[in-house]
Length: 223
Image (cartoon, rainbow, N blue to C red; front, side, top):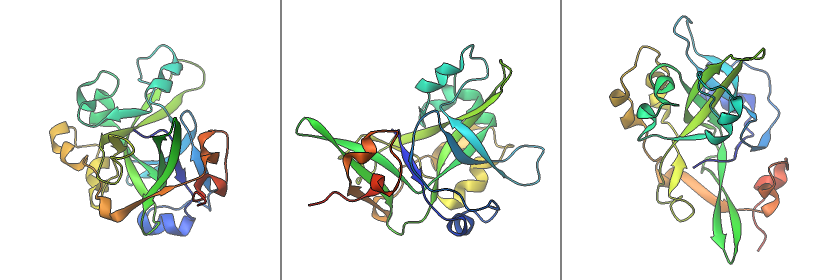
C-alpha cells in the first residue's frame, strides 16, 4: 500500500522528469498524508496538453453521498480497480500521474514499527499511477484521487506485500490518454518497479506522526 510519501524535488528536477512542468518552485513536502492535496498530472479530453493540478488524496466517487468515503480510498488494487464500483469509471475515463520522489513503509520489529524511506537511487522524482474523480454534491466541489498498488518488488517485500505502482516515464502518455478506455490495454503498465533502481533507508520515527514535517522525516536512523 502507500499511506505517506514525499515530494521534495526542485522545479528544475520536476521539469527534467516532466517536461511540461511550468510551475514556480514548490515548497518541499516531507510527509504527505491522506486527505491532503497532492500534485498530479491529468489530460482532459478537450485540452491540447496535460495539466498540473492539486487533487485531494482519497478518492470520492461521483455518486457518493458523503465525501468522508474518500478516507477509505487512498489506494486501489491495480488488479481489480477496473471492476470495482468506486474505481471502474475513473479507470476508464480519468487516470492521472501523482508526483512523488519517495514513499514510506513500516516494518514490524520487536513490538514496534521501524519506518523506511523508499526512493530512487538517483534521487529523481517519479510518478505513481493514479485515478481521479470529480465530486460536486455540495457547494464546494472536490477533485480527488487514489494511488494504484501492485505486488511488492524484492526491495519492498520484506516491509510489505504491496507497493504503489510507479510508472515508467515511457508509459506516461499511454496512461494519461483519455481516448484509451480499455482496461486490458493498460494493465500491463501496472507492474512492480525494478528493485535495482530503488533503495530503502531505515529512518527516524519522527515521520510516524503525520503532523510532522521537515527534513527530519527522512533523516537516516542513527547507528
